[in-house]
Image (cartoon, rainbow over the protein chains, first blue to last red):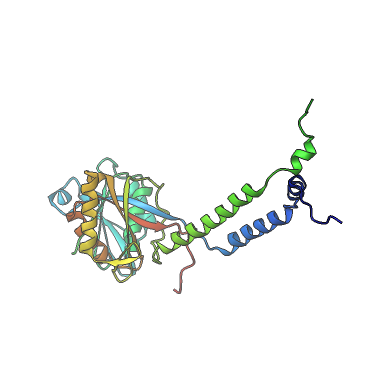
Length: 140
Length: 146
């Protein structure tokens, strides 16, 4: 009685007929499992700016209105732009929209202000259409 | 005269093994890369701003700034002097300060005094372009407490 197939042709035919469906099922289940259980890192954005040191150029008459000074007010950060004062980033954006864009805008942030307000000022400059944005680090 | 095998015979002999190999390799690849991506990011609460359209720079040095003003570079704390040295070397390597961007990922609660200190030192090291890391308020996790 011949129970063991010996010929190579028979063996290959047997392997060829092997049901792959269950294997693929398992693979896809694994794939779905990992997709569902893994936690994806949230996407981050960025705001580009140039770095500018404090100097005579920033205090000149021409550039003074384009400097945004962020400082702490009575109820949080405020944005000072020449003689005007904005209490929210939205207000700052609407003020910046009225200004000429060629000269760009410089952002100066007082040391006691949280970084979130610095980012809000840069975002407002970006939303207002300024492509030339610079940041002036200050310790005053 | 020998004809090509019937279609049913050809389909039965179709080898799925390479496809399954590729699928498994892809799973392993994504598992590893997502893990490493997570490891290289320090947990900082970024300012909640939508940012701008991503611009690809030739070279970007990313540094994290924690709420207490500590600098973290490639998951390791680093002194400001050491980081400024790295930035200077990078600028010298590219030969143009405009080709190197320093991306700072600050904690939004961090005081600007720390950011200003970092930017002042980097400016002296020759850095002229920088970017602040932000997180879109729509994809950011809910704020803790009032």
